[in-house]
Figure 1 (spheres, rainbow, N blue to C red):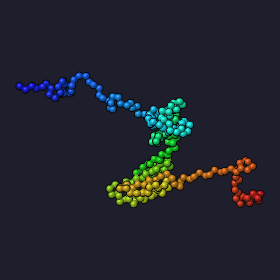
Figure 2 (cartoon, rainbow, N blue to C red; figure 1 turned 180 degrees about the vertical axis):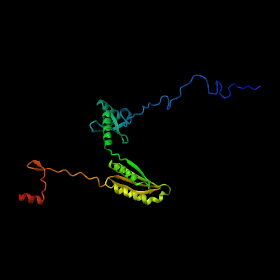
Figure 3 (cartoon, rainbow, N blue to C red; figure 1 turned 45 degrees about the horizontal axis):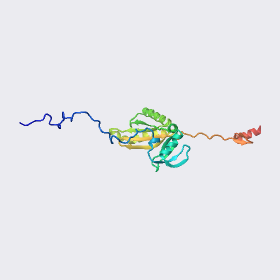
Length: 247
C-alpha cells in the first residue's frame, strides 16, 4: 500500500498550504535594514540648511556681498552664527549658489509681492450671446443692449448665430445682422474677429474700445512769474476787445 502524505501541497514541516508554521519575521526594509536615512520631503520651494548636500557652495551673505566658494559646512555655520538660514538660490550652477537669508521674512515679502501683482492683473471675461437668423426685432434690441453693457463693463462679447436645418440658406441675413450689430456698438466696441462661418455657426467677437472712449483733457500748467505760480490768462477774441475798448 502506498503512503499518502497528509499535506501534499506544502513542504515537510509545514502545517498547511500557506507555508511553514512558527513565528512571523518582519519584512526586510527597502534598501536594507541599515539603509541611509532620507529626511521627509519639505514643502518649501527652496532647499534650506541641512538639505543642501553638496560639498561646497558659492555663498552670498545676508548683505548681498559675494563671499566666494566655501565648504557647505562653513556656510551653514555662518548662517547659524547670525541666526539666519542658508537658502539655495541657483541649484543648477556649479557649484550651487546659496544665500544667507531670514527665510520667514523672505517668504512673507514674496507673498506680498505676489498679491500685489495679482491685484494689478486685469481679467477680461468673454460673454457669449446666441442669436438666430429669424430672431425678432425686439429680441435683437434686447440682446444688443446686453452686449453693449458687456463692452462697457470691460468684457469681450462673442456673438454666435446658429443655423439649423434649412436655415443655412439665411447666411446672408445673418451677416447683415452681424454688421448692423457692429455698427450700432462702434462707440463702445471694436471688431476683434470679423464674422466667420464655422460649420453651422456664424461667429463674431467684439472687444471693448471704440470712439466712445475719449482721453481726459490735459491739466493746465501754471506759469511762474517772479517766483509765484500763476495760471495763464485766457485769450480774448477781437469782438470782446472792441466792446471793452469802446466802453
